[in-house]
Image (cartoon, rainbow, N blue to C red; front, top):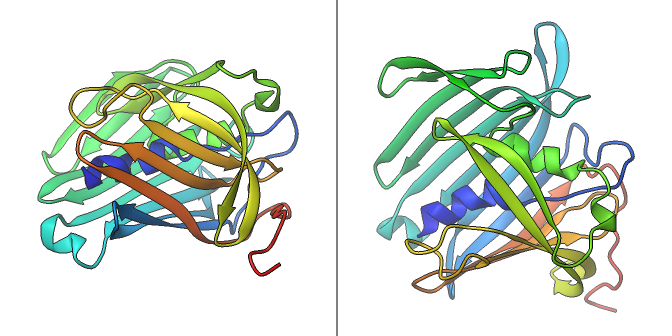
Length: 260
């Protein structure tokens, strides 16, 4: 259960903006604490760095997820996702996916050709190389997060409306859909934060109870910071909270400090 949730951390920790400058910049970092019921299960991190692809400066984003403490005795997770993203279009040039989840291992690297709508994937575990057709502006797992942060007119969405993007995952294009649920003020370790609420539509039956079992709270400011995630599973529930942050491009709007 924990490994699936760690994957959804990277796919569905989403944040958005209206039409303006990018909501993030080089140096931004997030750390999320993950709990399975009352048990501390692990952490997930996101970081934006600078890199060069074909002599062009790009964003190099890195996401990691890992179990800690007692959780490692039951199920060991050590995942790394990377993406190299064009600063203007938000489209990925390259992705890296290295995961070790209780002995389930993937070690892949993909190279996008957005002009020809193709992605060339090297699978280092199976020693294979394949080319797949993709749709226009297709994203990888990690670039989806940052692409959606700059999705236009998200602040004008009405309750019940959807936003959707095409994401390349496991050798095929997946339609990733998010439903806007409204706004809520939530209490965090930093204080009270005004948020927007989204529900990614997930597949029911094996992991999740219902199609809308996953809920995400995003700060209602210019950064659109992922603040909290909850998931109702077939067995138990998992929660992820923002534990620390730095390098935000805009001031983080906290309405009230805990000590006030």
